[in-house]
Every structure is written in structure tokens, then in C-alpha cells.
Length: 386
Image 1: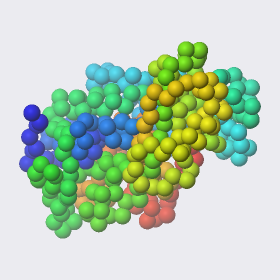
Image 2 (image 1 turned 90 degrees about the vertical axis):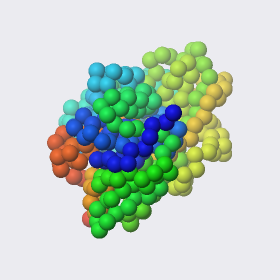
Image 3 (image 1 turned 180 degrees about the vertical axis):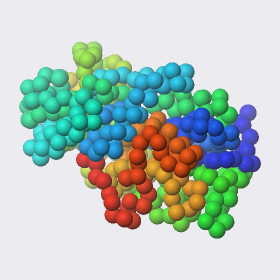
Image 4 (image 1 turned 30 degrees about the vertical axis):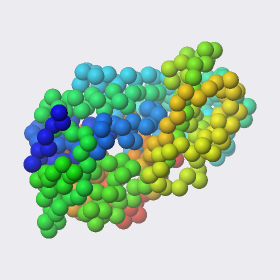
């Protein structure tokens, strides 16, 4: 029997992926007694979080994104100690392979920045890249960057860890509960309407990922977050494949590979993909992807497709998240991660909890990620988006 909908809450969180789950946990840990988390699907973490490839990395080209990943990936390492559930981290390393001179120049600066911030990314020459990327074929490789601390984690485990820990601390976490509106009086939130009733509250967190525009529109806010389809496929077993294979990214083609069980998971971004909520597989693009993937990794020619998936990125104009307050009193944003939300979710939920609880973030200055940066034309562009 499903849990009853509370009639009142100190705060209501919309969205039960990694962002909402982490925020709920950290708010409860900070002392909130009546936290309500709403997820419209039948299971937590089945939206954008559940459809991601599980990558975790430090290799970004802005200080704020590097810092977010540094601090969040440490939390994934200690998640079992914190919550009792492990994130199933696998540090296979991320290898960015560069085949264009312009990318080499940009990545050299990026690696220098990462090193200055304490991230031990290595710069590799073309021979080192080709050796590490084997059995991928990169005759056109110029150079690359590699970080052994990057890799993969399990989205389901991370979301479950935070949901279970939140419930243990008293949070009410509901599935199959869809918010349908937010009522305000003056500039203050009064309640949240759902398909199961009304919750009186003065605070709401929008952690709806690719669907974040909807709650914002209820309040008359123009939120620059757009859903963008990305898709991947997984092969059946490839017995001869090396177990030490890293997460390899052909950066120019936005094509990637990593081990997934006995097979390979591979994806490739479509540069012409229009914004929209379609999560069906684009078979024409899949055929193009498979052709390019086999060219890079001839072993795949003999493999069959075991599974395929499509999901949504939540894109902002500068590929950075939006975290914090809005012009509507009590309405907070935790969205717009542009494909990097899973890896940064643990720490960003903590940051938003600090902001809500104490009026400021103590763990990291995130003023550059404020909602009003778009109005002020203070965008910070992320280059390393795949």
C-alpha cells in the first residue's frame, strides 16, 4: 500500500532522481523534519538519472565544474560509509582522444587548469593514446588527456542510497505522485497541487531535470533549460576485449566507449538533434553511430546489440547548472546540468541544502551558477560536453 500524501511540509522537492534524492537527504541531515519528495514515475531514478551512461569525471574546462566534480566524486567514494549503500564506483579512467589541433590547444589549457586545482589529469602523446585506447583504432590521434580517477558509478545504487537514508531520517518520499501546480499568494509559495491532493508548504525545490521548465512556467519564470535526446547501445559479450579498457571518448565525433559487463556500451551525440522530450530510439542515427563505432573499434563488427536506451540531457545555454533561489520567494532550482548531473548530484544536493538552511553555501561558492546570470549576460561556457 502506498504511503499517504502529507497535507503539510516544510519543503517539497519535485523530482526523484539523483538531485532530488540528494537534496532530501541533506535537508533531513541538516534538521528539516517534514521533507516531502515527489516522483511522478513508478520508481525513483527512472527519468534522466536512470537513462544516463553512469560516467563520472573530473575532466571539465571551467573551475566551477571541476570543483563540483572533485567534491561530488569524493562523496561517491564514501557513499557506503555515509548511507550504507555503495555507489559501485569503478575507476577505469577517462581517456579523451583528440584528433583536431584546435581541441589540442583547448585541452592543454584545460589539463593545466585541472592540475592547478589538484586534479591529476595526464597529458598523453599520440603513441600513448593509441596504446591506451586499444583495441580502438586512432591513426589520426594527435594527443589526449587521461585521468585514472574518472570512471563509472551505478545510478540506481546512488539514488536508492539517498532515498533509503532520507526515509530513515523521516522524509516522505513518494512515487506515482505528479505535481500539477504551485499556488502563490503575493510572491510567496502557499501550496503544491498534485494528482493525489494538496500539500501546504512555503518552499519548493525544482529538481525535475529535463522537465524543469514546467514548474517554472507555473510561476511565470522563463527557465532556460531544454531537453535534448541522447542515446546509447550495449553489445553482447566480447570475450577477447581487454578488462583494463578505459572510458574512451573520440572528442571530435562525440563518440564514446566503455566496458559494461561482458560487452561494450557505446554512444554518439547527434549534433543536429533538436530539443524535445522524445525518448524513442532514432534508428537512422543509431545506424550512423554503429558505422562510426565500428570504424573506431573493428571488434564491434562481430558483436550483436543486447540493449539500447535513449534519455534526455537538460541543457542550458552555457552547459552549466542553475542552482539557487529565484525571484519567487521559496522556489529553488537545482537543474540544467547538461549531461553531468548524475556525477555532480551528490554534492549539489548538499549545496542546495546549505543554501536553503543557512542562506548561503559554505562548501563552495556557486554564485556563478545563479539563475540571474542569463539576464545579466554572465554565462560561463563549458567546452567538454559529450
